[in-house]
Length: 487
Image 1: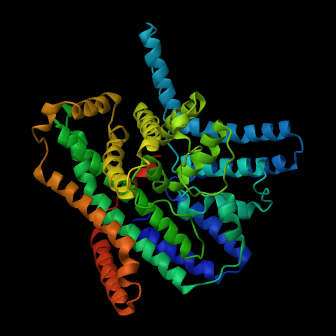
Image 2 (image 1 turned 90 degrees about the vertical axis):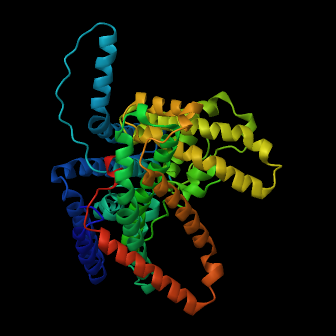
Image 3 (image 1 turned 135 degrees about the horizontal axis):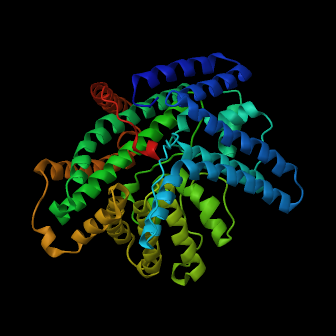
């Protein structure tokens, strides 16, 4: 079941109606069974994988809490990691490892027959394994107590709005909301509807209409592309994946709000960032925060947070005094973060690209502090935006060879002298860029322009939502799955 479908809208309506109608315990059962139905709508056999992960961490967390000796707590934590990462390895990375092992053996003259492995990647496995891992780690760190009520814990793991593609929630953020008696607030309910409509607009109107241009562009041979084509495709895919993934987050946040439950924000106009550090405080915030607290800062032996906010912030402000250990931790973190997205070396390149990008920023940021703020803001944005967009080349390219060939185009002056795609492709990229900038300006200035003018604010919002609803109604029929479902 996907968000941009009539089936989901009917499912959500029925679930929300029952949610507000039922008392606490039946309500939890309804959430749990509805979430299993939502997930099992795709492949019911993979419910067992998700429940195995959840059940393991439920029992392990109680053993960790009950253990007084550090060695035993660590041993139980390793059990959780082994089960969750083992499931992730088998379903997501086994074929990749086998294929690469065969290539290496053939280099050394050993011919090996490729085994026939029919492994289907369970939907959302990367997200719910990270969520359950964070639960056991937080119990290990004594941030939270182990949850004894398996039904409540099961609702935390399987809660359908965020189950497949996030935001990646932590137990301390959601468990108490599921356990509490909800208070119906009309403004929260209306806000949820607005977020769902806006998410559908971003998905079916923006992302799905950019998608054919991106697919056609990346299908053509790299040799026929110009450097301008590569840049245009990088921007187009950057916008496509942003509209697509932020749309999912908007609908997830809105769906939860209909039930009075608050999720942390996952996107905040990332393409308006003026530095790579700010970009990762605005893009996929729950994942970058997860990576920060459960991988990067532990590698640096720095105190961690327990909230999905802030993104992948730096552990030190002394950018000019980086140590070998801190640089190694940065690149290792980003290589793993890239590999988390997919079992392909192109994703590792994507991660290392961002690591280099961030390391370079740390090296120069101390020298730019004396510049006027407007120069740092707008100059930083003018540099950050194209570099962030070009990072999407390895994320979308099919092979490492294609990735390197596309980057090579960018450093060859003669590759800027011709166009290899239809004119409307460049026009769409320019229009989307300008529209995104105007949307950011409107978002930042809306309260200043309309806040105290109630009638004008009402008319403007009514007109905007009228256009959004009309366009969603027109474009909702073609159903395309969300990009991040593959991760």
